[in-house]
Length: 153
Image (cartoon, rainbow, N blue to C red; front, side, top):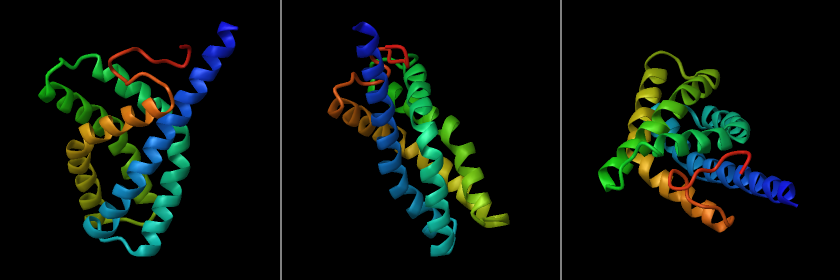
C-alpha cells in the first residue's frame, strides 16, 4: 500500500514539476529568443519545440535540484530569492545555451541569448520558484525546499 502511495506521489511530482517548467519557460523563452537574441520566428518555433521536448526529462530533476539548493536558504526573502535564482541559473542556462545554438543562434546572437537567459534566470528565479510551489500545491504536493521531496517519497 505504501509503495503505491510513493509511486503516486512520485508521478504527481514529475507531472507538477514538468508542467510548471513547460508553462513558465515556453513563455519566457519566446520573449528572450525573439526580442533579445534576435532569432527569427522560425528559429524561435524550433527552439520552443526542442525546449519543450527537453523540458520533459529535465522538469523533475530541476525540481529536485531546486529543492536541494533551497535547503541552504534562510527564511528571509532575500536569501530565498538568491538561492532560487542560483538554482535556476546553474541548472537551466547551460541547457538553454545548447537549445538556442542547436536552433540556429550563432556568434553575437548566441552570446546575447545566453547572457539574456542568465539575466532572466536571475530575475525569474524567485517568481518561478513561487510558480513551481503553486503548481505543486495544485497537485497536492508540499512546496520545494521546505519539506524534502524525492523520487522515493
